[in-house]
Length: 229
View (tube, rainbow, N blue to C red):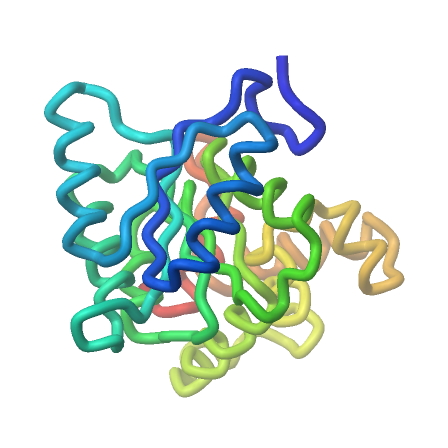
């Protein structure tokens, strides 16, 4: 059984790292009202300790939500902590929720298997249901990226001329793939037929040298290859 946002009806076990006390308490209250069990911490060190403690009890959280800039230096502590946790626990779903796009470590986070990774910008999430839905998708192993994050990551990737083989339309389609859109959703967004979208996706796979392998999620691999990971 799942709830309206696609998460298990019994709720998710969430570890939230946010240094702003007001925002932290607000997110805890919002998620708790939706049936989720939330443990909140104020910085990266506390986040790492909490997740390692849960891991020692064989009880990893269903998803980690973390800000990027937290004490003590307010630069990238949260993101570096999340990257380190994913290195130890590749199956741990993580959702970055920040005001900033940090392309360097975001690229590292997306290396290898990007399933169960999300990156949303605080000032672009205006609906609680949207945030809860994204949380549920990440917990289920999907990749959820804000369009602005995709735009900046792809802007950095465009410096590699090897990825210049993609047409403008193919980059547009790939950007929507990176946001987790289905072919039907992409067709609706770009006012294309599903057949046209399928042809663009097939061309992307071919130009990025992604051989067919039913065991791999080629949509995720396409985004990673484009971003240079």
